[in-house]
Length: 166
Image (cartoon, rainbow, N blue to C red):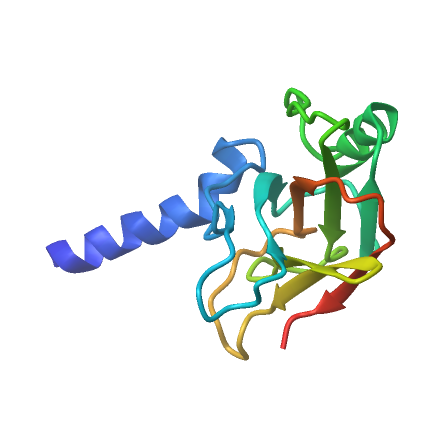
């Protein structure tokens, strides 16, 4: 009986965590990518600066930001469903650019999107995007969600393209 009660409490905590944190629930996102031996030697370090399950963006969209003004606009839009709005994370646009990925509005929880790597190629940058959805029959929150992720990476002055992870 104690195990069942503990499981119920843990489950309820996970269900209500986004509500308690204003949509900024703890996530399974990695803190960033560092080139590793045996991996793509052109992988750029990136840092995760924000993300969550409840953005203000309803359509699936990928964005690239290179200015403080663009970052402020993107931040307001990304957090359109969160009140009060969280503080704008600092980004030095002399050194960094920001990639934002929005999965769009979903009818339940269990969905997610994240930047999995940033790769520098000759003449362009690839931002690799991973998406997930709940398995059939999975227990998920009944709340409408709109998952998103934002990362900063070294500014390279090259065109940026978004591609799905394999």
